[in-house]
Length: 52
Image 1: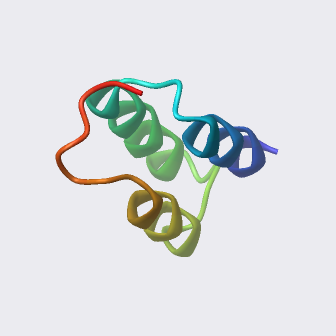
Image 2: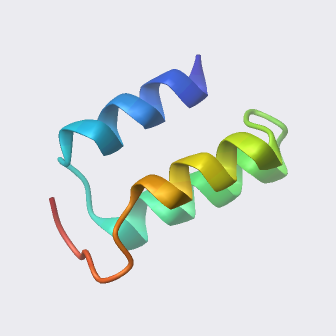
Image 3: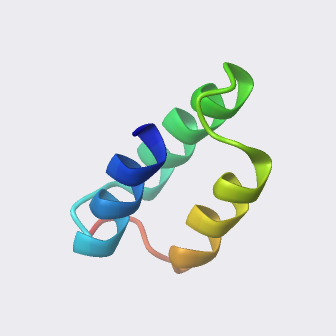
């Protein structure tokens, strides 16, 4: 569920990159998402994007 919600947010573009990365890190550390899911979500975000 966490992965699905994060993916939806990223797809819609309504996020701050640094904020979503911080949340993803916490979710990964707490086993809410897998490393594979983390990497997939990370690949969906342009590196130079600051706000959606």
